[in-house]
Length: 217
Image (tube, rainbow, N blue to C red; front, side, top):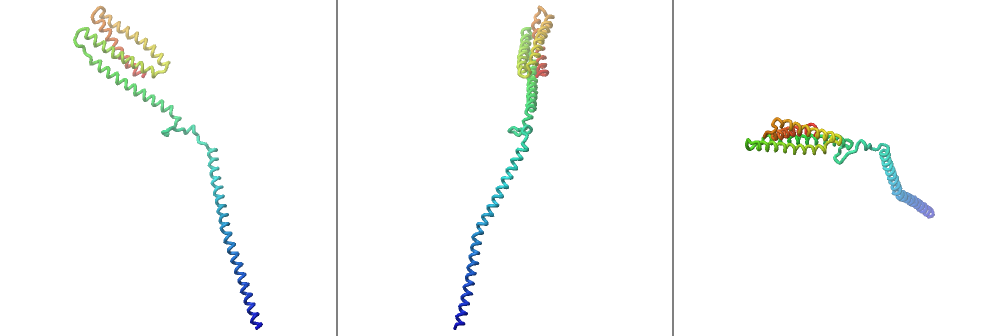
């Protein structure tokens, strides 16, 4: 009986020891799993910090590059159309030349139209009065156009060029009047004296209109 009791106590002792060991393992496992999320969280935080530091380093690097290698705006200025603005004066000069050439062509066409119109003028009869009227109409048409061309040139020429043209124009007026007077003298005292005078005025004014447009405009 005593042996039976001893064996029972020994078995119970072993079972108790096994139970304690099992409980201890379970406790350690539970504690390990509780610490794992904290460790993962710490690892994640470290990763985030590393990412943040990398981004900050990259931003700083880009800023440094901008400061070290600024864009040379003096060479790359552009307007709203994407054109380089440092070429604008050259383009404006080309546009000005094109506009001037276009205006010159316009006035040459206008001169040709007036010439066609005046050449087609005919007297209503053979009387001196009717012939005078034709020549007067011719002169008035060319003189009016001459004044128009002269006004356009005032807006195109420089002050120095305009002063030179003004002096030339004064000399030309004297030349025109003298030639007209001289031509009319061969009919002095006759009915055709004034007719010849006006006809020469018209012819010389026509020539002067073409000179101004072709040489100055």
